[in-house]
Length: 221
Image (cartoon, rainbow, N blue to C red; front, side):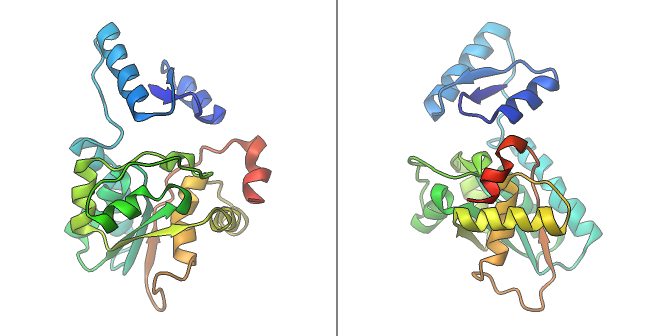
């Protein structure tokens, strides 16, 4: 697994705990690609891209598929967006299984390249992103950009304080520990930017990789 040197210790420990070898690189697209190519040359490994792959997107779509099967007739469905794999899968699942469901993405305002890309009609790179939602720092690829342009209602951006408040709300009221990236669509829902009155709403809470030592700092952001 190729991971940036800036990856949280809790995520590094989890990956290693599952038995994977971690190869660290600088936190840039170029460095990730170079480290990946080196690993392939040295080991003969097969690249499994985290979002630029139809099979990965289809796999990520199963979260929304299960939700839509369990709770049919949702009016709104929200998921976070970084590279766009999960959100693309969510949008496709809704398109084929519940066409009346409108899908929204949640994105940190400090890493809003997906929002800007859809607004501009072309992929824009992430420039000096800054957010506690470290799982959403990647940029869209042509594959996910195309899917989101066609099937997504909109992307809602939220600030760090809103993410922290959403994280606290889920922890206090739902008794569920999620990571900041998963709190982003919750924050988007609570932002007032989406009409929610009388709506049946679903959320994809996408992960719980939280450094517990940093949790007080995250909640007070």
